Length: 332
Image (tube, rainbow, N blue to C red; front, side):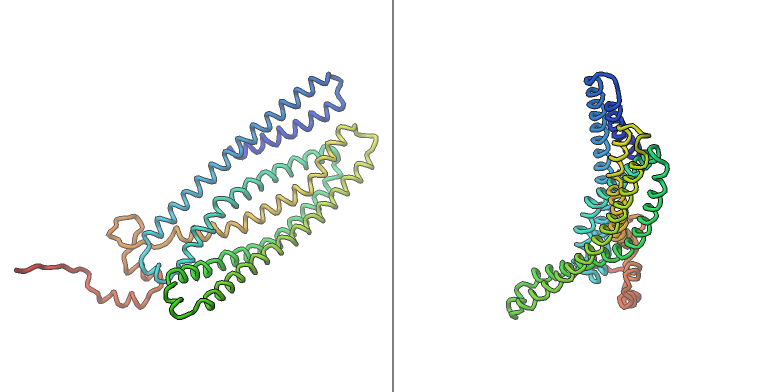
């Protein structure tokens, strides 16, 4: 349904622009073309609203399923998991990673699909206008693919580093709140404030590195897009007198928007791959071992198996000689 709505939206948008071309060269009355243009505008608006509704509903449903599953697995995790996992790491999964699932990933996915359809439409129009334009467009797409392929690996690693650097700060803040009285008694306020500032600096450093990488990627795509615009302009000069004014205007309109559409499509596609780091981190917590085979849940493991999965070998050795059952007797 989402793919059909995207295709319908691009067709309606293309028809509204073709209608303007027919309006320029047509011989019918002005009222006829005005009504037709208004009709295509209304169709475009309706299809756009339907597409947005489907994107929002799908994003909310997937986010709710992952959040519910992760919460259930964390609440039923063995005690060894909470002993070996900082609180900030757990909070980071439910705060930052779930925010990516709720906001950034659906937006990047929807806009990437939209820009893909727009680029395909523009290419069809340019081929219809001048097949020679495909030579420059193909070269630009190859260069964009090379730049994007080079960008996505460091961007993904820097995004993962940014997500990981937030957990120590959350753990430090939680420890500061819990141990407030102890900190005040020993006069360690400055030490804890300095540590919080240091951890905040680590987050800012990774965030700055990510946006520097993204900025360099954007500049490279802008340069490639401008070269294609120059090529289309030269083709318009070369074919002057052989194409009507409406077709020239339509081709120039799409040619002007092609560089930015290609840039945003490649950027959103790369951002989507980077943001999927949050999905990996959430899915990791949906596969946590569960405590207590007595709970009767599918996939639940006993205390000994849970400790083994968490890597607590010393505790496993103690459990081997621990009584498996006990009872309380009251004797008169």
